[in-house]
Every structure is written in structure tokens, then in C-alpha cells.
Image (cartoon, rainbow, N blue to C red; front, side):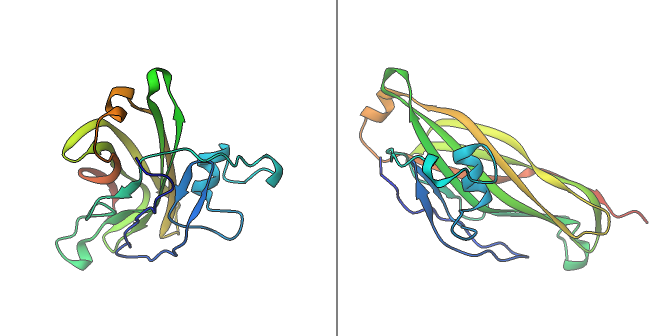
Length: 201
């Protein structure tokens, strides 16, 4: 287990993102939006995208497994036989995690992800969704896993939209923590479960 280790977030194919680190209260996220933190960081800590007054921001640090986006799992293109047939792209631009003690000596991990959907040349406004897979692993051993539907609806006349997702209550049991070896959390967009609106002809 590691305390406040760096979070890796891979670049996206169609839109870039800034870098940085926001940490505190056992939380880490890869990107920031000024001194107030990122929308994802605020949502993870306070349950809202806007932070409360500084006096009530928790300062306690907890030991927590690091979270990262798997190689190749940060962006998913839909209908990408060639550049003109791309209907949409969904990306993960930021990830975060925080931990709380659980009964029996375990840890409850809370994982957040933030991303963007973009309409391609062959797409149109409407919902763009995919499955986000969250896994807690020690080496090749899967300790816990969750699948969540993520995405956003692109409004008419717009080319993109953002999404946020927080997955609560992922348990790492105490007997697992007591065993040797590092534990990591991985976030991946599932290429087999993406949907997007097709352009009407």
C-alpha cells in the first residue's frame, strides 16, 4: 500500500488536457482547475463540484492504493474504419480515489473518473455512452471489480460534452491487505460496450 502516490492519466486522441496534482484527505486526482481543485476532486471529497469553505476541508491523509488508467484504456473511438467514419469518441481525462476504514481491518475505496464525449464526422448530437471498468488488483489477481455506464448527451449544435462518475464502496478485505504485494486500482473504457447516435441521412 502507498500513501499519496502519483496518479497517471493518459492523453486523449482528439482533445488534450492539462496536468497537475490535487491531494488531501486521502484523495488524488490527475488534473486541477485552479486553486479550488478540479470538478472531479470536489465531487469526490464534498459531493458537489463546488468546494465548501476552506475551514471544513478535511486534512487527514489515509493510506490508499494508487489509481491509474490502463494503457490504451483512456479513449474509445466508435465507427473508426477511417477518419470520416468516426461517429464519436469517449475519453477518460482524469481519475481519483480516496479510502476509508472498513470493518474487519479492510478498506473501502471510492473511485472517481472524469471524461469527455466528442461527436465525429459521421455522428450527430445525442447520447454517447460506454462501459467503464474499475478493477482492484494485486499483480494479476483481481480483488474486486465494477462495471459502470458512463457518458453524456451532446446537445444539438454542440460537438462535445463532459461526464463525471464516482463509484463507492469497493471493498478491499483486511486479509488481503495483510498479504504481501502492492495493490493497485485500474480504470478502463470497455471497447465492447459503446453506443452512440448515428448521423441521420
